[in-house]
Length: 251
Image 1 (tube, one colour):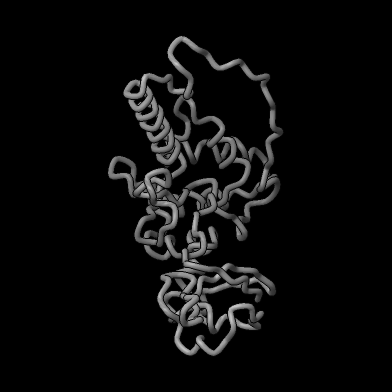
Image 2 (cartoon, rainbow, N blue to C red; image 1 turned 90 degrees about the horizontal axis):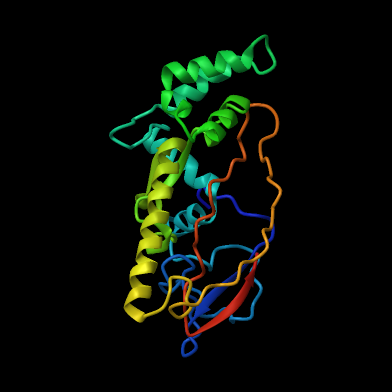
């Protein structure tokens, strides 16, 4: 198993197989797995040997299934530097500088704020207070930069590898996400006009009944300290490969 792969002690996967021949298909690329024909589909496997056609597919599958693995792989390539040409903020260097100011020391919040004002003034712009406060309170990589999909998830970029990811500081990522939301809303409106329905899916002149507001309490993943060893970026879709029939595989 490649050293970059991390598996739980027990995990259940749906593995496709060919009914005619009984051959198992790779979880990552759906190619036939060698030497798997003699193992019945209903067999519970005690290792991952028959799940993948190669070590490269095993590593690629593990990368897609783990937000932490994606962040680590992307950091090795781009070193935490925002890839927006108008920004290019070195987020890793910024976090390192903020961590020098020990949390709880005299005036630590104001001193960290001054560092951000000098090195990353975009955090102090209007609308970015939440991002600013989070980074001041917890100076970790996950509060400074995100792994962003070059081809958005809603356009089919969800089940991706490292080739479809880029580093964006949280300020640039917020703007990209907002722009994508506007584009999706405009597309829904355009499609609705073409079908004579409103963007909400109702006929013209009909309005959706207003629903009572539901307030969901916020959850702080990093409440204390400046460590994000287990930080997970948003989950990336990587469902099991399709096939004419599936067999449950438990590891």
